[in-house]
Length: 127
Figure 1 (cartoon, helix red, strand yellow):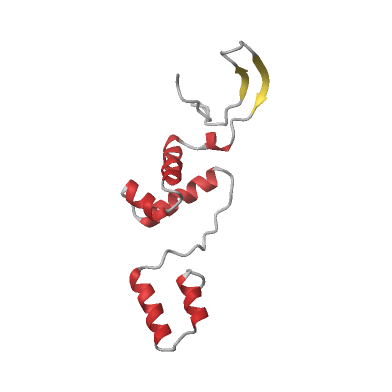
Figure 2: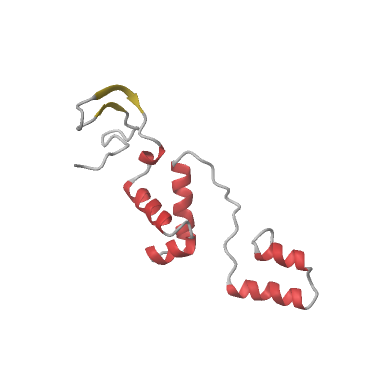
């Protein structure tokens, strides 16, 4: 069997299922059925989603698995999110590096920032 495709190979519009068939009991249903959102993804995007899921949604693991930079992995995830019809918050901050964490901890140790501010920065909220 061939994998199902979600886009027309001629015009790129979304395909629609019009017949479902059960091999076991020979039942057939005809009508208009949606393929679902994931069939809107390209084969490359589907492979990315499979990797993302197998890595339990951890972008650093996806980065290692695909041998890509973190920004590239994040951009591919954003492309998938958009392809599924959702909006992406473009103001998402990059993860803190080890050096950035050390800077926050040093500022906390010297009294330049409060513990609450350090925790906020370490979570990546408005550093």
